[in-house]
Image 1 (cartoon, helix red, strand yellow):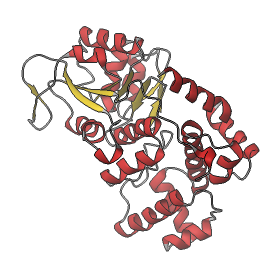
Image 2 (spheres, rainbow, N blue to C red):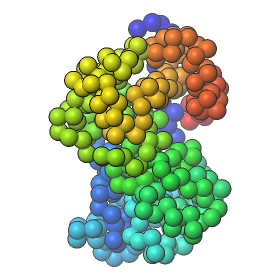
Image 3 (tube, one colour):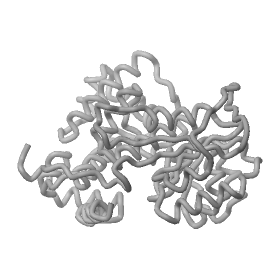
Length: 335
């Protein structure tokens, strides 16, 4: 590795960020399990800086999740006072009032810089707290009309897997919570670690937040799933290469026409747009966590030149690569 490729330390709010997941009577089991699986499991292979995890009870007394599962917690809403990340799983009902004490605790945590994220209908808790006023947010497509009607101060994104507003993050239906959580891991620890976690989950770490919720066929045919999975693995390992539809189709064992159709059904976008998105994410990772020169990053991510990287980066993120790097390094110094 070149001398100028020194890896930077991560910009965490603390050496081991504390993730607190909310629990309440009527808890959505799957969404809660996503938070536990990604942030709550020990990962000794990733070193000592991995997240700490706790569960905070919103209600007093016995808590039961969907399916009759009983939940034991580590404390009450006081845990939110020391949290670095708060996760709100799917709320117990879009027509169920959100306790004022919870709204106040979330507002206070966010005011001191805590990141707050919701999965699926958990967005209604964020909305009730007022934290989404004037912001963009997403949720499961079934709930977007209700969210827009009840909270007109929120710009509701109808067709996104998740949306990152910086310290406020929201995701669509259940499985999109996995994508959002992996996005947070990628922000905190980089692409390689996020991919390691994804492999442990046996999921493809290739979906970004702008991908559509409405896939024509969300479950691929068994043979095609394996074929496309091999293509995604190949692309992740060879992002800097020149990939044509014909070559990718041949690797998948499909005709170009069939490959394009199956690829878009699986991802909601075209191969070219997917590759561009992945290259930009890889470039962000290099910018945030290394001192590589911009020309070197452009070469290793397939943009060919710094000018091309700057063009696409600014078009996608509304800032230059160097401005993004400066912002990341400033956050590192302040941590």
